[in-house]
Each structure stands twice: as C-alpha cells, then as structure tokens.
Image 1 (cartoon, rainbow, N blue to C red):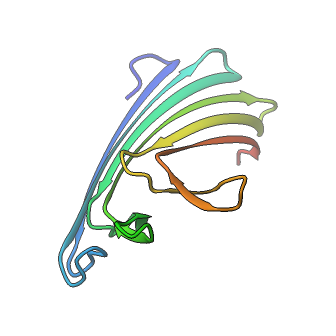
Image 2 (cartoon, rainbow, N blue to C red):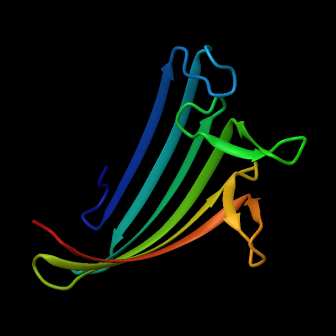
Length: 139
C-alpha cells in the first residue's frame, strides 16, 4: 500500500503445513506460521529508510530445524519461535547503482542461535546481531 508517494507499507502473512514432516515427532503433521511488516520512507528521490518486523513460529521444526541444549546438555531438536527487527538505509548513487546498509536483530525465547565463545566452547544464545553493507546494481 502506498498512502503517499514517499511512503510504502507492506504486510505479509504465511501459513503452511506438511504431513509427516515433524522433526520433533517423526511421522506427525507439522505446521508453521509467519507475519512480516515493512515501512519504507523516501526522504529524497535518492535516499530512503525502512524498518521491517518479522515473527515466525515453527513448533514442529519443519522449516526451522533448531537445536537447543537438552536435559543432558547435548543439543536436541526443538520447535522454535523467532522474531526479527531490521533497520535499513539506501542511497541511490546513480541511475542504476545503489548503496544499502542494514542492521538486523534476530531473537527467540529459546536459546537456539549457535555461537562459539572466545574459549572455543559451543553455546546457544537467544539472539544475534547482523550488520550488512551492499553495493548493488538495479536493472
């Protein structure tokens, strides 16, 4: 939806299912659901900013085969809920070339993000940060 020439709003909803696809209960049915929304604002003809929020739930591990420490401390498959927030800035450098920077935070109530500590031991965290810089070409 474009309520104004310089503003766009996007909302996305996904639901899916697959028989005999559960990773937690092999042979059982699995379902997943996701929602995402984006707001983009064009500051000028060449500069825009955007923010995106996402939420995804896959309690049977069909699309997001996550692991977390089990009762014995060893990684075991788990169903997962994850969410993310992304901040984005884009500069159109020429008619076809652009530069885009992005910061994204992914989070989950479960400690499913695999990490390696400075001591070399594996661990699992409830979130992760991502920074990206992109030089692109529109055609």
